[in-house]
Image (cartoon, rainbow, N blue to C red; front, top):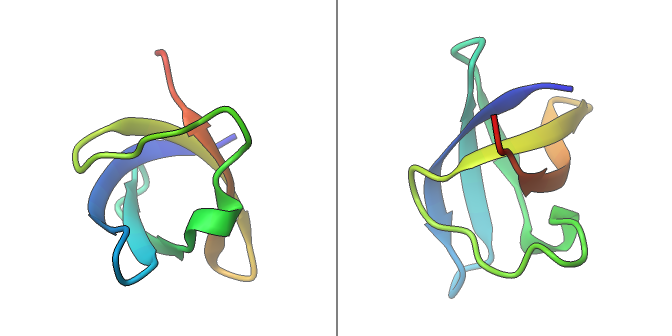
Length: 63
């Protein structure tokens, strides 16, 4: 499962970007954040899946 950091998150506009450890940027919308993951902040470490080039199933990463 890929890991990376939240590089941009705008809850008012409803989107964000994760910079993966592979150097690529992945867009996401809040509906892709796993239940129980309540707050996302820029620079936060996350784990996610990639579907059609976008991040899904986003959860906190504790590595």
